[in-house]
Length: 502
Figure 1 (cartoon, rainbow, N blue to C red):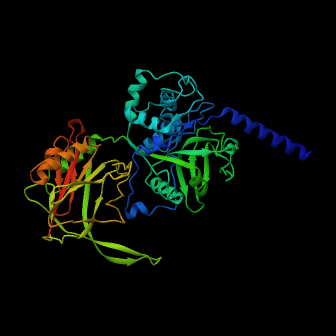
Figure 2 (cartoon, rainbow, N blue to C red; figure 1 turned 120 degrees about the vertical axis):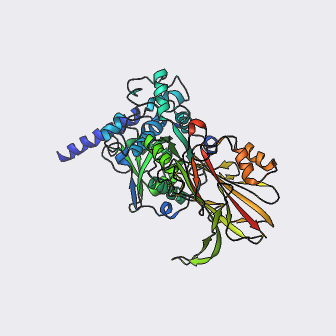
Figure 3 (cartoon, rainbow, N blue to C red; figure 1 turned 180 degrees about the vertical axis):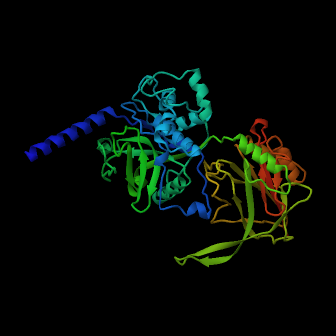
């Protein structure tokens, strides 16, 4: 009798698994060429960024997992209903799952517009198309354009598009390169999750993925299993003790652990081919504006609540120290600076000069989440160099900052800039609330002009630079606080350092 009951249970589970595989789609279309066109997330530094917690979970910000059914709609579910909804919940610090689900973004709004074959609901989509759409047009709410109510061939109407514009993202970036060291994938994934940012991933799935039973915590694909298709999901947590990441799927709550699944670090490294992050739109509250305006009225006090801020450090190697592993690490000395009394934003070193050939690094700090950074320099010969966003062969790094705790080291933690010859070098760092358009043309204009460097920067970026009294520079440290006004186009502030080589 016991054997008979066991056989019946096994038979029921087998029938359930077969039915699930027949009814459930995946739908991620893949293109290495499309992926490599996306700007790559920069390599960030900073003690608070690199020292990550043992475990992180964003599940409290997740909606109830949805079910894509037999349609190839995973892109809509991962980008809109998943990652965008989670990031909005984090912005609001909303942890009521019922309310998060009620206010979730639409999977169908995205999928119905980016599906490769408009006539075939089983057809998938490219994640890159979903990201472009949510940046340019946004994504309305699920309750407005419901996945179950609207057929996959139905296109959103004017009211859906109007609502979608309220939920546009500011930007997105690829997380790692196609030839990324597998161990680096885990390191970057954990660091990003520690900044309270979910990742949208394209993962190779096998037959066993569609056979995961209700209540199963872990998907354990055998290394010998061939990849049957690719699937878009959202990484919402990790545990570095038990060595797994946790994924939000779109097969409904009867799949896995209420719609979530754990995947070992090893399997994630092997199967995750693409990964992306999004920066949600920056909303500036009236209280934030008023606080910044009031603080900026007092020239003696830097405001504590501002829309745009940043700090810039100039440092030289000062020697080496050994870490616990016996490796020699370079340590640095920060160079004192002083603001020019005639030109706000222009600084010079207290030390009157350096030797030609001296090396140094630049460090950008204290940048609010989602703001952009541009760094360039001009030497005595008049040649201009763009140091950030970086460009390595055909790959350009994204210009935005993921989290205020990060630092951007120019040129990198392992390399140095050099004062090539006697004369004056000027280093400029632009902090911006939004991407700055026509950057190459502006830099070419600076290179062609005959004028003091600070005046050239002011001329080339006059349409975007915030002017007094809405920007305030510290008298000694290279830092500022400003009130950006996107409606007027005034979105950026520039700090310039003049360095003399003898």
